[in-house]
View: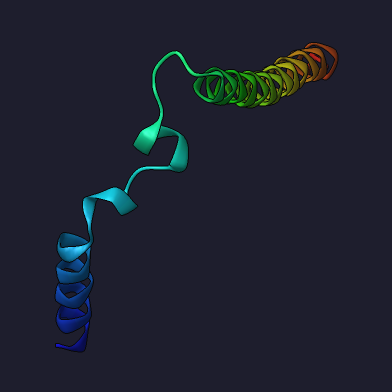
Length: 85
């Protein structure tokens, strides 16, 4: 019951918040052609590039580990065949 009260209180506060509090300083009064907007866009693209590079590096690392593990398992299976009499 307390959880429902907390959720409804947070929802009511979110609905009653003035709309101008939702926008950042650059978006609220900025124009599309301003240098501030251009700088913000370059910052977003730069951070997006960094995040994509890090995630791609992690993916490549795990693919490398998986391939290495499969190669080792195949080598072990090939070399450890039972001796037939």
